[in-house]
Amino acid sequence: MKRYKKTQKITIFIILFIAIIFTSGCQSENLKEVKNETQVKSYESNNKSQSEIHFIDTGNSDAILIKQGDESALIDGGDNDDEGRVVEYLKKSGIKELEYVFATHPHADHIGGLDAVINSIPVKNVYVSNGDANTKTYRDFIEAIANKGLYPSVPLLNSEFDLGTSKFKVLSVANTDDPNNNSIVLEYINGNDKILLMGDAESEIESKINTEDVDLLKVGHHGSHSSTSKTFLDKISPEYAVIMVGKDNKYGHPHKETMEKLKQENIEVHRSDECGNIVVISTGDGLKFDCAKGSYKSGSDKGDSNNNPGNINSSNLKEEKVYWTPNGKSYHTTNKCKNLSRSKNILSGTIKESGKLDPCDSCH
Image (tube, rainbow, N blue to C red; front, side, top):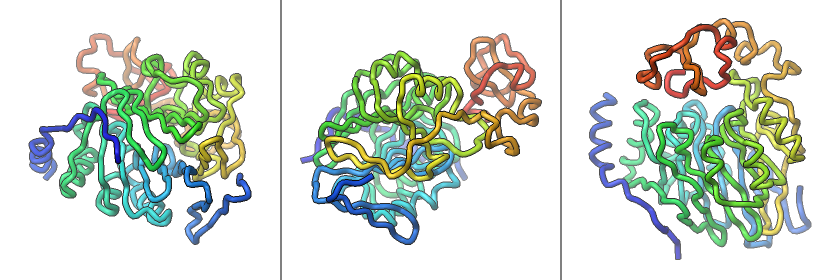
């Protein structure tokens, strides 16, 4: 029997939807790898407790498929322009139905492709974070849910959801002013294997995560310096880390500070910008990767990205006029950004002068 502990139904969903419609005008002997024509990998095993964790390469965005037996879950769905790739990946992976879809938070690089997924593949349960977003991407997501007669729920802290003989446990579902920190943080547990999926949660939330000794960390916020604190790494002591990040992305992800900490802690890194799709096999007593160990190079290193006009170190971005506050974490492309509406001391200049590495998710 499925466990759906402590879930909170969004009772105003129908009202919200109506408003939106109007507003929006490595392998063991018994592990056999099977490659199909689209290069999506699947695996056969006599081990019924084996599960697959697919970190789908969608660039600087998140889309994670977890399968065990005939049951599957999707955590995030990439950005808007990734929707075709995500749907194709799921279908080529043999997904006929998704037991769960978790939308960790409403930023486009996490939910952009979910409307296409919901429209293309049967989904039984949808879970969302606290908060919403006044964006077409979010409206498309909500509309797709409504059109399928689904009712999204906000899971409560320590909720558990079965997937075959494995399970998810909700370790954070905060309600703050920052959508990143509202990310649904999930711990996927399969036998003795523990995988921590951070969404875009930052150090403020990391300090509240109640778990230890995980095997794999999906690094928060694409390797941004705002996540993956040393204190957090010391507490959870992962053996492996996966970073979902786009090659030569304009944000400079993963940031140098993050990569230095992972290297100092001797954590083996696997990166989608170097490996493409990353498939991890959980046997219930250990993890196996389908790609080689990655590098500790930061996204802003000049080694292989000198000619990329979107790199954060390139001159065009350095000279772009932006706005920021002395104590803020991000820079803004307009001084009319809603996140600056209460700020009395707004500064302007170039990104380099701001000293900020992260763009605002609302106005950028």
